[in-house]
Image (tube, rainbow, N blue to C red):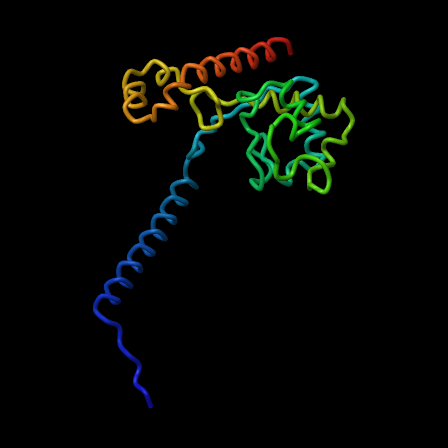
Length: 202
């Protein structure tokens, strides 16, 4: 009978290191869950908020009835199969959202994964009545994000005026990116103004 070949010293070290990392990961997970269970506040602060008006409340109900939460997260509910929509109102205006819901690929200017014409899974959304799409767009536009959070299109105020950030960008960024930086800032400012004007009108 052939004898089993024993592990080489290097393989033993590799398995020992892997085992140590696995044990540390499990211990860290247990410690984190124990700490989280005894915390009076959430471990990770929510950086999104919502203040729904009448149309937004209707839109929230219609959003769920249309099955949008099967793919998307909104108001910290739903799934993460698609993009999270918490904070989308700080990145897109109500008009943009409504136009996207009506004709996704024309607005997005490229092929979309699920939204668009049949047989795409979410093709049914574009076929909803215009009033329904309007209310859903209002609801989404009222999902706001804190400035500077990952869900917001606007960076922290400190970053915009930071000499360090600007210096790093000037040092590391490629020349084509620098050449278009002013134009991008101008477009961003126009987009921010459009979002704020849309919020004021509603």
